[in-house]
Length: 200
Image 1 (cartoon, rainbow, N blue to C red):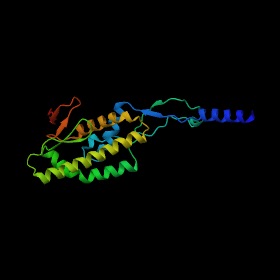
Image 2 (cartoon, helix red, strand yellow; image 1 turned 45 degrees about the vertical axis):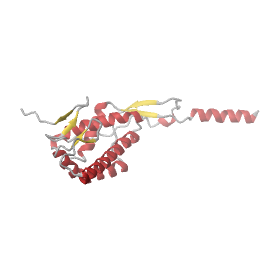
Image 3 (cartoon, rainbow, N blue to C red; image 1 turned 90 degrees about the horizontal axis):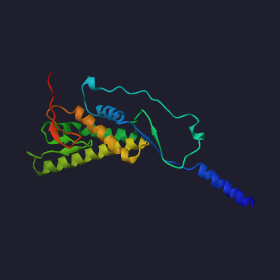
Image 4 (cartoon, rainbow, N blue to C red; image 1 turned 180 degrees about the horizontal axis):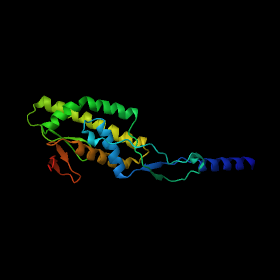
């Protein structure tokens, strides 16, 4: 009888300490701002585009670990998007190494920024078979590093995996903003255009 009571007590304790998936969600504008700040660390831009780093804030109570765990996934809305980790730093370094080559292809309208935060080959005109093959390898490596960054941002911020689309949308918006006049960019609706600057 004592054993049954002890087992029941242990089961009850395990249930009350059940592991839960706690997902953090961010408003799109917060993700957009974070992704622009991250892209500014990779791509050169005018000083007017530099985004100030927000102060760190924590909304968790110091006693949150004593609170009873719930048996379902929770969503927490927070105001800070983390964009730093060793994984991100390594991917950023690789992206910076190939940045001048990518910019050269953008200037020739061979590459463009799509609406998923990735590079697209718009044309291979003027390239021979070997050059086109090297271009494809470079774009594949660049897009792989971008996806590494996007997935890592989701992970370090405890976001639901489905939120990666919001991260990619934020990166795409930042890339459109940082694109130079004459470069190919893809709008949210899927249409492509050559970026032009409206002169006042």
